[in-house]
Structures are given as structure tokens and as C-alpha cells.
View 1: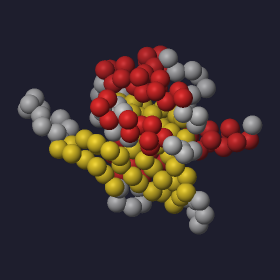
View 2: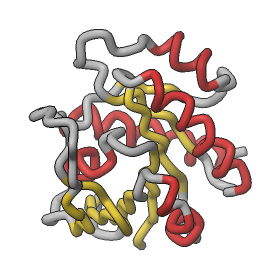
View 3: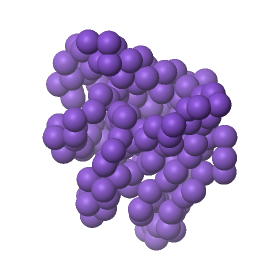
View 4: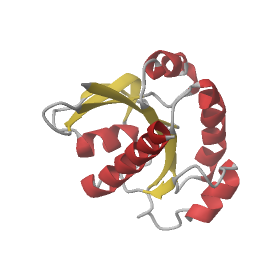
Length: 176
């Protein structure tokens, strides 16, 4: 059985890295080079334009298929396409960028119509000045029943904890 999980979030939230850190296969990426004029060496040099894809085999019968969405507004038509048939989804937030919190509110609003459980992962918690979980929950107006998990997408174990939180939420809903 193949279970589809969507990984979404704003531009530069860490979706591609999230999938890359956990996937057992070489992830499929649709990255395009960004032309930058800022001269900032730490600035992102590529961005997803269609989707990312990775896979995790749980056991002989179950595999998670991870689909990452592009984060820019101009590719939001892909969100609806990629959300078809999902078991659940992860909304990735860049904890180190206050602007991305506002943009994440728009993404959460868009996905209200998707009838699937979700969790929010506060990525980049290892970055100095990253917003704490209470601040993020407040700025996103997240209800208490929505799991908000600290995350560092560069770390496989951190990504694993986010996905386990989502699977536990799915399991709880199936038991109801």
C-alpha cells in the first residue's frame, strides 16, 4: 500500500531538504536556478517549480510517498493537484523568517478545504533568533488540537518525528 503525504509551506521553508533528509531513494526534484541580485552568498540558489518526491518504506506492505509543493504564489495551482488523494499533510514553517509566518497563514487557509489531517512543523529551530513554538502558534492562530512540532529539516531524526506525529494524528482519527 502506498500512502501519499504532502509537504507544503512557503518559499524557503525547507520542503526539499525535509524530503531529502528522510527519503530512502534519491529524491525527484524540479529545481530551477534563481537569478539573484542581492549578492547574499547564503541566499537560496534554486527553487522548486513543480514538486519534489521521496519515498520511505515502513514495512513490506506500506510505503509513504512524500510530495513536496512549490512555495511561490505563482505555482499555487500545483497545491490542489498534489493534494488529491493525500492521507495527510505537513505545513512547514520557516521559524527564522517572520514574513513567512504571514505567508503560511495563506497556505493554511488554502488547505482548509482539503479533508485530511495535518501537522505544522516549525523548521529551522536551530537558527539563532528562530521564533519559539508559542509565538508561531499565536501568529498562525493555530488551535491547540493542531500539533506544532519543532523541526530541523537537515536532521533525519527530526523529520522522522514530524512524520510520526502526522501518522499518529491519522491513526487517532481512524479510531474515532
